[in-house]
Image (cartoon, rainbow, N blue to C red; front, side):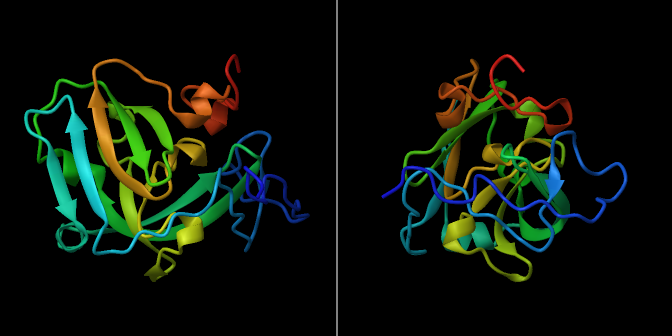
Length: 203
């Protein structure tokens, strides 16, 4: 079994991308949606799924699938940009704003470490997942999110490279210190701004 799934390369479209929406070094993947992951795809039944806030919080918080689905939901239409150079425009998701989840806790944290089934983690500044910039989504294009794209739920942080939008998310650990996640420990950039081509450490 390959450690890295297929899809780290793709076909470039010949058509022009919408002006001002394609970061440098990217191409429009069009109708495609490459599947990229490290390791096998987890399959967690909904009766065993939960989402937690833990770490630097006054009291940890946990939602079952039913409780999560009952939270206020938002439709989200955004462009996404993968570090492997493909971009996809006008993707349509639905889920819960991270702001909604964070209202449940008091914290002095400045960072979060997203954690997922399968052991994947990725780190982000708290400021980048708040103020309407990030969601935990469970629906794509009007349908339940496929496991290959991170279902039943994934993080969505569209202003950063897509590896920051952790698939199969199970929660956020809030921290006062920045802790590199999976790809960051393998040499990817700690922040990952596609408009600044922050692909790898030192970019």
